[in-house]
Length: 190
Image (cartoon, rainbow, N blue to C red):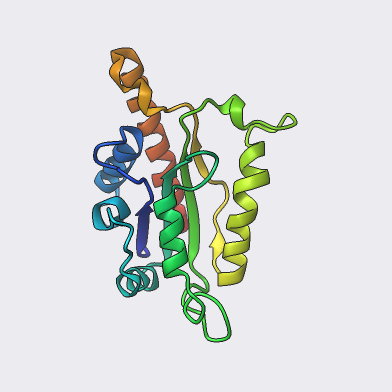
């Protein structure tokens, strides 16, 4: 299997997540060779070690951005990471070729149900109209390839964790998400 780097963009994966944390645990159990880069664990102060993170992405063949959608966008920590790591001369520009040929996979969870993100009869309309154009611009500028489809799970709000039945449903959805991500990784990392 090619080298896989999963960048966890959750801003507080240990205390503020049930589903995203479980997804990462299941993926690591199923694919122990993957590297999981927990940004909130490394950078609670948002001070990204650019050189260390650039080395991680250089060493990877497949990069996964695993994150919950916060207010219809990537979490601020993941956005900061992208700004600090994908720099001119490294990821783009005349000499910026470090990411060319790498694959990028989006692994996204939402607290709100799917209906919130539907547009004009398209279940993933919001993601197609808002999130994907920015991502496609990034992969276009860096020479990466976006693996389609993204792995998306809706309606997994952290607020549901205290109800035992809903907590079981969160686990089930996390396990399903992880299984879909593992299958996609096995295919993308051949």
